[in-house]
Length: 113
Length: 112
Image (cartoon, rainbow over all chains, first blue to last red; front, side):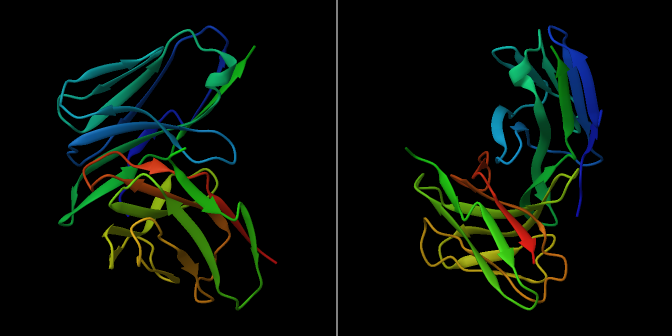
């Protein structure tokens, strides 16, 4: 199956620092989604992006839908301990004739207080 | 509360045994999905259903089966043909195939 290239795979930062992660694909997507997953739980939707160039914020989180429709980034400003978790990007588009959601492999965020 | 309920939280399977994972949603969503998550990896699609009584294979359907007899329920059976079933299984639903998917809290399946 197809997957997105998400980077970095892991990040170790100090509390208060800003965080940036991104996803790239060789395919064009109609929608980009960003999820956060904590241990033993399912992913929770953070931000949904529907238009190329769209920049959307949710509190300290900001995400953008790339102009080429092949990439997206997520920024977290002024990180706090509860930001710890795994962040997944997901691109939605027509793949092999069907609407599919393709996931990146995740960015594991660790914060030192 | 509206949401997606997966049960059980933990499940153990003996060799050669079929097991069924439950997924129920009260969000009135038309589409439902099953994903498998292995350590350090993203989610891979097993099966999906866009409407009652219809479902399609995803990227890794071999060794799995599903049914969609009711809108709110989409059970997944892990059959004995699935040789490496140990994983975290996630169920999701969405209003339609173009809408964002929302996830349950998962079932962790292990082999005894």
